[in-house]
Length: 233
Length: 228
Image (cartoon, rainbow over all chains, first blue to last red; front, side):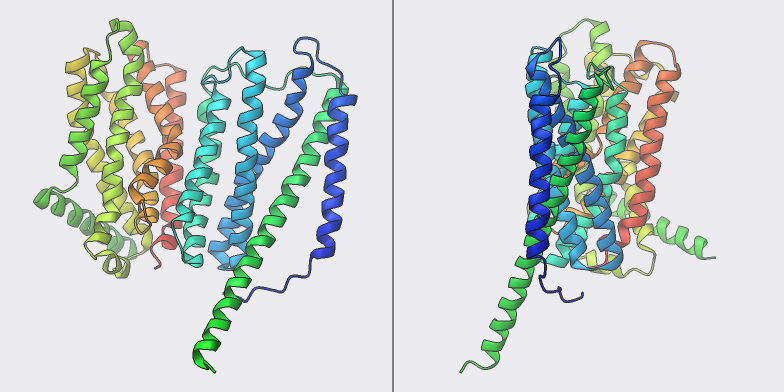
């Protein structure tokens, strides 16, 4: 395992954060003030712009977690595990938001908070797979072993998700697939997806940085402790 | 020559596990008993017309089989660790994929044995003609078993050395095998309620794809699991 590189990113961090904040604010403004109000559902339909964006980020998180897990298994560099864990955690947050926004939308559209509809079911399965992987990771203390187990599970999860989507889609469902939309609505949806993807990337980057810094702190602590043991005076 | 040696090792690994199970019976009786309890409980709740029972029977029997089958998967590696055999097994001079395929084969046999007990009991208790078309049902069973045990063996090996492994295995395995649960339940329902049509083949193909993908993925990533 290579030694972790020193942290040189605070300025880039602040700049990236500012850009992402602007993108999210613009997208939010477009959702509430630019997009036309939908005729049937009214204002509640605006949930869709958030819902589609976080659902996309939830799936992207799963793929990123799997790819970074595979990179760790190949290269054995802990930084790939930090990326994998960070993408998985932010993806899980997005999966949670997908379930919440979807549930709120379903309550208005279908008159129920939850129904065993294929896409809802597949989102819930994705959420449970994420949660299971985190639980297994939290049960292993050694970082390298945790990274190895997490990497294999992330790859398995990534391969499994398309099959889960396929299986659930083949059930008859009521979830809308590519409905007809006003061109302005499509632009807002696109802006929303881009800004949330940027936010997802930024949060993943921040979480990865935090994980790397904690690992470096732990390494320093061990070094200081070893030095004290070697020469107590 | 190498393929011959690997096949011979695979056979001896399967033989070792099956011989141990037949001698001391420390996994199968518990698994079958749990399966029977689940089938009894499910059958007592089936106070429905025969038509409705036939519609839901596929999902119920497969859930009972998979839930009880997690015991076989869990013990396949946890048993090796508890008996102190894990390191010896990892040092065995064969490719890790051979170890994985041996465990898959043993768990497949365990699940098949479980099905041979549970399906007739379920038919007797529920009156649902599950075995009216034995050939297609066997095909569903074979593909489902391969899909389930390939993921089950892999996850079992990963969780064997961690705390709370039993609950973690069930928590991870059952969501991962959702396509197998849906596929086997739907294929069985279609088999019981109508002719074998393109829809039935669609679900059977999904089961086949899942089984092939996870046997291959499992064999490929298993070397990362056994390296400690």
